[in-house]
Length: 241
Image (cartoon, rainbow, N blue to C red; front, top):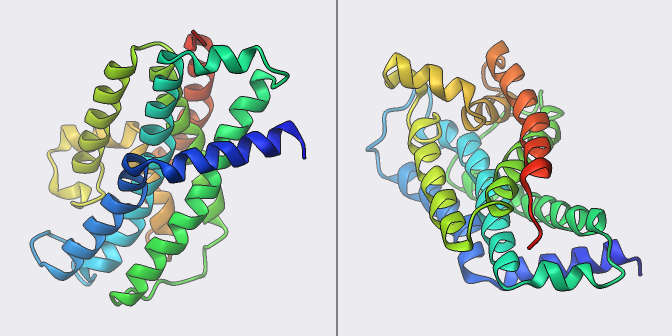
């Protein structure tokens, strides 16, 4: 077994054994999807059911939870407890360690998509399948963008600061990126800011993948930009000890 495969398996086991990670990656997204699909308290676009509007956004939220929150917090505490320093003394290369973390997140996201889509279908969602080729592209771009943000914070801040900041960013993105509320219900300034940040563009990509509106040009440019710039910034800022 190669070092990359072995480390990927280890990273995956660590993620799945951590109750906080499971809450962020599965519990919160599925809980929000179920609650707001059966309780009619959110405004949704005319002609859409609550679950049809929520499901793609909840998939975006799942990517944010896995790629930014879970990865950032776990990596931050690995730095704090000098786990990364000790791994540096083993034959495992740094590129293999980063690759293992990314592969473990992608594996989690595959399960997340299966779980969220299954729950949404059980709640009455009947998505179109004409643009599903966009789904893996959206997941890869979203993962690169949010993993870059999470690793940048984890590689520069103290562990507790990373914990607080990624959770704060998670809540802000949840409430301001068109995941729970349609963007056109927000003030124009917030709409413009949301289009620049990566969460709303990721939700646009995922809605288009399941038969939603065409992706706005600003969302295409924004998500590609974050997917390139955020990992580059993380590589620049990251400190292993």
